Image 1 (cartoon, one colour):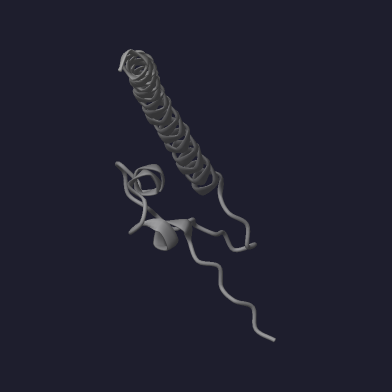
Image 2 (cartoon, one colour):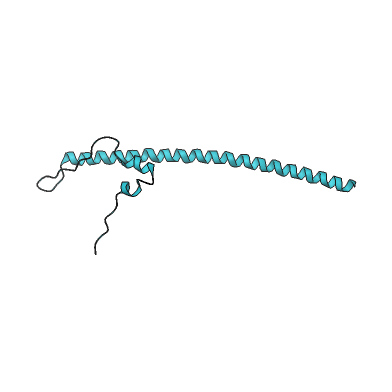
Length: 111
């Protein structure tokens, strides 16, 4: 039974999310393949390069998470203000309706 090859996140989500693209794609620098010595181990420079790359991806993800949280917080505040204004408007309309109903009752009894 053959295993399905895992798809890289950049290939999986690059068309759908600008945030993922910004997080994973390299902003600068070139990508190089790690060098392997004769004994089959990866050398120190390649390991350090991979770690720096990983740290850059983690840093980009953290920045984008903060940006998304900030956007959602702003949207929440905007929606909260909108709902508050809508509720005030509804309350004013209800008060006007009650006043008009009272006036109508008075006019019914006068005639």
